[in-house]
Amino acid sequence: MAIPEGFETLIESKIFQFKITNRNAIHISEMKFVVLSTIDLDLKRVSWLKESITKLYSDTWSSPKLELKDLLLLYDSNVYGGFIRIIEKGHDSLFIPEGWNGLGIKRFLIGITRSINLMKELAVRMTTSNSSGFVDTKPAMDLFTPWLDRDLSYENVSSISGSLFQVDIERSVCFDKSLVLDSSEDLCTSQLI
Image (cartoon, rainbow, N blue to C red; front, side, top):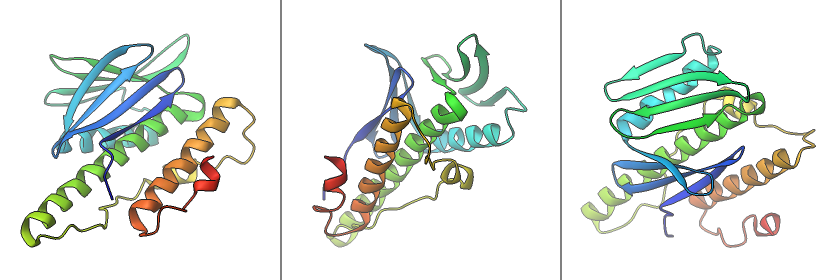
């Protein structure tokens, strides 16, 4: 089974693209009609980013600023709503819209989590294939934070963007199941068409 090198997620009017550039880096691009900005994060910094966003969001933004050596995380708002600004010092910065009920931030966290899992899976496959000659097909999966799982149930969604988000969730669940199961060809194909 081939491992995809990246994926995209739509947050309000922006597309965020997550690409694994090598075994130790994630390239995140923010696009509208063209690429607006990009940042490159290693596993340590992207893990810090995930934990920091989760902590800040869980604490309802009690502290609007967190900083790592060369990475800055800010929460701010304007007339259009709240947003997170991620600044890679000396490089670009990303603006992630908070969205309705925090959906933008949750979708970005899902993208980060999938990227971390993909990086770990690639590292396991590289290690296993180099040491024994066989490739291990079991992915290294992290669990989402409990509030992320709990808030992703949408029984009464009536908006188009909410319905499209539900389709994205179903597709990502099918993708995650296909990483674990051997017979992924007929898994979820009827739901995706």
